[in-house]
Image 1: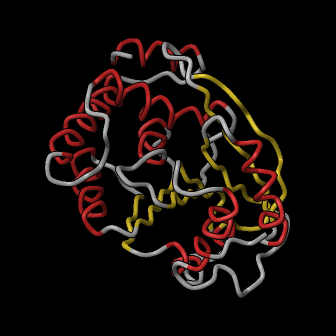
Image 2: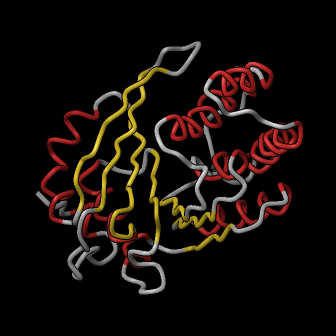
Length: 238
């Protein structure tokens, strides 16, 4: 997907990008490729792949959730900024927080935000388990999202404690989402969530399947969750 096709594909979905926003995506791509030579950010460096599999795929969240409100969004394990930075470019009013456990990625994101001229963005070098027990952030976000971080039983424990009541945890998944949801539903329920909807779609041009899982936070998360760093992955809630 070249930049022009990217712009047209989003326009078809009702997201019309200005020339300034297109320039921001061009800078994003350039900075990503440049930094990827020294920091492991992505295996994709071809322009068409980045625009389709990173930029367009990230913005696909907006096909199923209205980001036109003045929302706070926390991106857990965002790596090179996906999906929250592409969403921030499209919806500049969003208040974005990213937490990632690798210091080098946070350094990259700070540099990227400066190059893109972004405001209302904050980056934290921390484990999600510790971040979720921090009272400054616990149950403070309208939306918490994660893309290809962990299986649902684990991911729910990392993300749901950060979602405010009546907010949403939005998980970006691949094609095996049904099996993951069956395994993860006990954890989702225990942590205060309820599966609201699952949207399955294919990326244009290559037709690979993607899933967006919408989980509504219906009640507060028990205080003992998330457990200490490393425990959710070693001993998932079942």
